Amino acid sequence: MNFLRQFADWQLAIISGILIGAAYPPLPLGSLAWLGLVPLIHALRNTSPRTAFWLAYLSGSVANLVTLFWIGFNSGAGLVIVLASMLGAVLYLGIFWGLLGLTLAWLHKRWQIGLISWPFLWVAMEYLRSFGAMAFPWINLAATQIHFLPLIQSAEYFGSDGIAFWIVLLNVGFYRLLTDGSRRRSIGTIIFLGLVILFVQGSWRIRVVEQKMQEEGQPFKVALVQPNLNPNEKWEPDKREFVFERMDSLLVAGLALEPQMVIWPESAVPAYLRINGYRRKKISNRITEADIPLLTGSVDKQRNESDEWDTHNGSILIRPGDDLELYHKIHLVPFAEYIPLSWKFPILKKLNFGQGNFVQGNDYTVFEVDSIKFSTIICYESSMPRLVSRFIRRGARLITIQTNDAWVGKTSGPYQHFALAILRAVENRVPVIRCANTGISAYIGASGRVERQVDLDEAAVIGSTSLVPEKASFYSRHGDYFVYLSFIVFAIILGLQWKRNSN
Image (cartoon, rainbow, N blue to C red):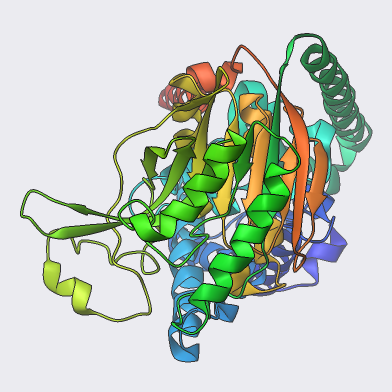
């Protein structure tokens, strides 16, 4: 407690921001998240709602800056634009922390329940942040625990929201440990036993899941191609032929592994493959001769009702005989793949932030190869637990992720993005095959264990067999029930406190 008292409230807010930000990948410092909020909890203990908003906003902005600095290294746009994008993201996302602080301070001032409110309101904050065009579940607190595989196994029941709940509850416990001298031993014992139970249960579930996959999982061999191409040069006229020749040679290498399917990454070649028969012909001939389908990322164009071209970021399953199936990306990245509200105000499309003017897809496509049903997720969509679980409820039992993280180089961005794939595997209890242009490509089992991977900035063609389950997880079937349950429990707490005060 004396340690906390020597700092001003604004300094405590900054310390919390640094600790929480540092807990995210790539460094294995997820344990910082267990107590990273303690300084902020102390800073907000007796402040006004207005002051609490700004302290929490400061803390959140610092955490977001530490976590998301890599946005400023995007090589796909000019320096001013990417720095403005980073600053905009940091400041915008800080608002959610500010609202959290304001609400906590108000509840504490009115009913003295600020401390117990923390885990419930944190879950509410992350849930609110996952909606709309500006949704950003990338920084959900569960991603900090990816290096502690046993501790995230409960996501199969509670989703990533359940992971966030116990992390914040742990922070509350550590704060009580520091401030409640009379019950320090009992509180410490509860914290220790809680972590032990989580670890033991998680370790047991990993063994059970992996054993069940070995006994009941249907094998599906996939070759994935990580070409390691510079995305800034891919569409240049004098580079296109090189890209096609390179991808053709890698396709030949992948087919030689005799898989049931080959995967290329997001926007693998500089062409609209579905409508460009000339460019597709050689690819189609290769896979027809080998009798092995190819799943490739590809931009696509379609005529809309106004007889204008809609451009999509998509994926095409090219089967032997040139039979095509499509998926168009559903959740686009604002200011990178489109301008928000541009569908309503077309003039916004003329703004140039270096973005594409893509149109979102609407269909939750489920492909099928050799009786294996799977869906593909494109890039940022892998941060969306709700979106991924919808594919599972529609019958997918394997998820492929096609992405291109080359834009941000060897920053923490690709490592954080990779961590989200592990979370999606555990939540849904399905294997995830991640194919990235420059890495990290990997085969991830239903337990979340990485079975094989290709690191950043390496070119490789690898094959591996994933074991595909028959049933989806509890979370996949029931979605965000834990969030709704936490709302109900918190409403009961508020009601009881209101009744107590009334009496």
